[in-house]
Length: 139
Image (cartoon, rainbow, N blue to C red; front, side, top):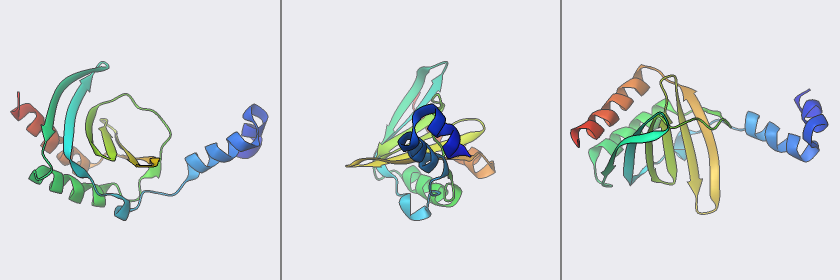
């Protein structure tokens, strides 16, 4: 049904790509390995409102990886482009924390690997609190 609708709109090749994006594989824990240095930033009304850079050996990066491997494994493909909330960017990845969802984009030397998201939960809220607390310590 989806393919038929997309064929009518944009042709079969486009429908194949859209179907793969919308129904692609879930994020696997072994795909998650965030490396620093990382940058944490808060955004409000489309503008960056605060920024901090953490070095690769910062314990918060280890905590972020442990959280992500548990909390983000199984995240579903998400092709929506969300406005930035609190973002964490490092080598080959970007996280975007929204009040209701966390989005992860992963790329490598060849380009984008994928974009996934998962609804926020208590563990996600605690990780976000730890990140924003560090951000606000630098002010």
